[in-house]
Structure formats: C-alpha cells, structure tokens
Amino acid sequence: MKKFLIGILTGLVLAVLTGLVFVFSAIRLSERRPTVPDGATLILNLDGDIPEKQPVHIPIPFIGSTDTFTILDAWHGLRSAANDGRIKAVVLETGRIGAGWGKIQELRDGLLAFKKSGKPLVAVIRTPRSREYYLATAADRIYMSPEDLFDVKGLRAEVMFLKNALSKIGVAVEIEHRGKYKDAGDMFSETALSPESREVIDSILDGVYSNMLTTYSESRKKSVAEMRGLIDQGPYTARQAAGKGLVDALRYEDQVYGELRDRLKQGELKKFSFHDYVSATGGKDRAAKKRIAFVVGEGAITRGEGTDAMGTDEGFTSGAFIKMLRRVSSDNSISGVIMRVDSPGGDAVASDEMLREVRLLSKKKPTIISFSDTAASGGYYISMTGDPIVSYPNTVTGSVGVVYGKVNLRSLYDKIGVHKEILVRGNNAAIDSDYTPLTPEARAKLREGIDEIYNEFVSRVAEGRKKKWEEIEPLAQGRAWLGSQAKQNGLIDELGGLDKALELLKKKAGLRADERIELVPYPPKRSILDQYLKSTSSDQTIETKLRKILGFDYEVWLRGGMMKMMPYTVSLQ
Image (cartoon, rainbow, N blue to C red):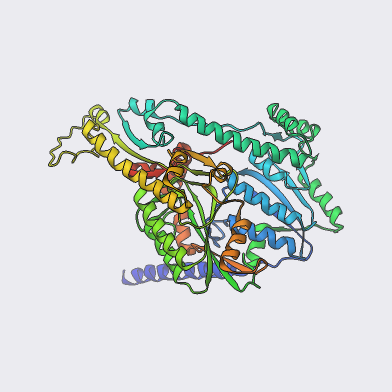
C-alpha cells in the first residue's frame, strides 16, 4: 500500500513537472518573433471585435492562438508596412467587424496612409454591411465572391424597452435624472422613445449616414444623390452590386490572389498575416528615442480595485486605473501621454476620482485626449483636464447629465411568497430599499443630490473647456453628440484619430514633427496564465454575451447610486 501511494504521488509530481515544462516551452517558443519574408503580401483579416486594450497571445497548442490585435497595433502596423521594403501589398479581408464607427475611421485612415506608399491595396469583402464596406472603400479594388450578398442597405437604430417585461414578473424600476435628454433609465421605466431621445438618435443617424454617403460617393466616383439612391435600393446580390459599380469585380479568393501575384510579378504570392507582422516588428519603432504613454480607458466605469490595470475585461475600475496613471506619472522615461477613451461612463464617484488623477498627471506630463467609438457621460467627464481633445466625426460623446436608478421588487416578492418587515431610524433610511417605492420626500431628497452633481458636472466641463457655465449648460442636459457636432459646439478641439493626437502632443511636448517616437501601451499585456484563466471562465463568457444581448452594462445598474452614464449603447447597423 505504501509503495502504491508513493507511486501515485510520484506520478502526480511528474505530471505537474511535465505540464510546467510544456507550458514554459510554449511560452519561449511564442516569444520568438516570426521573420518577415522579402516581397511579402500582408493579409489583414478583420473579423469580430477590435479592442483598445492589449490582448495576449496564448501559446498553448490545444487551446489555439488569439490572433486579436488592437487599434494601436493596426495604427503602427499599417504605417510601418508603408515604409517597409519587404512589404509589397496589403489584402484586406473582412468578416463581421464588431468595431464602432470611430475605430472603423481609424482603421480606414491607416489603410489610406498605407495606400499613399503606392503599393497595391485590395479588399476582399464577405457579406459586407455598411461599416465593412466603409472600410473597404479605402482600397484600390474591391472584390466579392460571385454568390455572396452585398448587405449594404443604410443604417438603423434599435432601442429596447423592458418595462412591460419587468412588470410581468413584478419588477419596477424608479428613475430620477437631471437633463431632459438624460434618459438612461427609460428602457426600464418607459415603453417607447421620448421626443428628446428620438431627436438625439435621429441626429446621430443623420450625421453618420451623411458621412457614410460622402465617403462611399468619393471612393466610387459617384454623386451623393446617386449613392443615396443605390443604398435605398439595397441590399443586393454580389452580381447586382458589381453591375451598379459598388464593387470592382467578382472573384473567388484564389483568383484574387492570382491577379495580385501577376500584378506583383511573383511566381508565388508570399502571404504573411498582419498579426505575425505586428509580432515581428514588436509593435514599435525601434529607432525611436522618445517614449509616449498610450493610456487606455475602455468600458463602463466602476468603483473598486479590479484584478488588473483595467479592472475587468468589460470595464475599468477607479482604483486600478488611478494606480496605472500614477505609474505613468512617476516614469521619467515617458515624455508625454495620449489618453485613449472608449467609455459610456458609469459610477459618478469613480468618474470624479479618475478625473482628479488625470488632472494631476496632466500637470506633470504633456497630455492629449483621444476619443474612440464612445466617450460619453463619465467617459467625457474624466477627459475634462483642459487638455486638447481629439475625436472622430462619428464618435458618440457629451451626454453631460446624471441619473439615479432604484429597483422595486415588492411585487416580485409577493408573487414568490417573500415578505419583508422594515424597521428604520431616520426618515430616509429605506430610500434605497428594494421593497418600497420612493416616497415624495425621498424623491425630493434624491433630486437635491442629482441637481448638485449635475451642476458640478457642468462646472467641470466648463472649467475643462475654458468656457462659462452658462455656455455649457444648454449643450449639456444629458444630450449625446457626434464628434462632428461636438466640434461645432466647442465640446472637443479637433477632428481626427491617433495621427492628429500625436501631432498635437508633439507640439505640446516641444518635439519635432518628424520625431520618431515609441507609443507605450498602458495597461501592458497581462501574464499568459492570468489571461488563460480569464479566457476559460464560463462566467466571463455568459456576462459578455448578456451585455451584448441587453445592449447595456447591467452590472453598473445593479450597483445603483448616482451615475454619469450614457443613455443607451449606440450601435448603428
């Protein structure tokens, strides 16, 4: 028996040691950078989400690799490829891209930057929607498979209302807000769009649609009116799209690559994935002498410490974000900061704590704010440092307002036979109880706090934008603006992406316009084991899917309290 137990323990130890050797060998192998062949054609395959935050490549064969790259990777890779003599062409392949219109603009700008090199840039689009086609119009030629569907038919916005469904199970949500457009809780408390909500969403649709039509028409050499007519008749089969000049040719994939091979006068096309190219170049300019921190704030804002530099995969927490900012502030090798914001807002207290720390960082390091897909409510608030703000024309921003939500589960408790007795000391002790509705006195008390926070919000924006309170307040009221509209109203400074942000930062930091710089991402990549544990968590997968189905971050609402939160998630399809 003793020998048997010793044998089992020995076997377990050997199994653990073998596993560790296997993992660390895989890690070492993953650290070897691929070699870029001369005469390579980069294959830029875009499918799914394109994050701002650094992902991790998991080098464990039976799990598979994570070929995701960030917007910063795309920015660096495309500009490097333009000047890299080893790269002869780029092929853009699109699936269903999960990025919003701000990121799509950044990617398109990167493709146009590559195109200036004179090297071939072709697009192979698969069942394209409006945003994939928008991206593909940067290419020299656009190809589709003969039997595919050209699913470009305009834009739509869908807004979900849950009040009737919640009432069936005995759940009521009581909302208080300041700002006539601050209808973040309407999906819980109303059954249809308010006139104010309809006004804002129509405005966003008009702005994005106008920009989209202009881009399409310029690329395809058609008038805006002609392009509008074509879109109104969509969607099309691939053959119909080719007949109307929306794509250049119908080809199967091997035919596309065969034509490109002949164009490059190569015996065999040397395909090289964009992900491998980013890995091979290290995602940075090795000749750079100046280091610029690229600080990412992505997701819903919450209070707490979090587990990494961004808190969770779906948002970022105040404590972790502040610690990260302090690391940047104390790093003497950092010459400046680009703070990249992609957030609909969240907790009001957390937003204020973050703003203070960003302001402290701005006093030590030259800082520029760059908006991604969304920088609204709390996401806009944390940007009010007084530093220049750069936004894409189609970024959703503003939404300066405050909302409070409280769930009343009394009817649900009655349905399932649950009874509560509430004993209080203090008139408003039960103000946030899930068993009682808000009394008139409690509602009045809440409005006092909401009004104070709203007025302070407007004051912070006025201070950050160097304007009077009276100038900002009419633009506030919880209204969301597109970046192009925000520029007209003085809520941002410049329209553009990372190129414009870097240009402004160089001026502010006293660097030459042609200064070679290294953009250092914060947060950096997490450990492989940490990423592996997160990637195999079923809870994370369920949470991510639930957020996407509902269209909002339910976790923020469950925490309750005062929120600087975007009224809705804008995803124009």
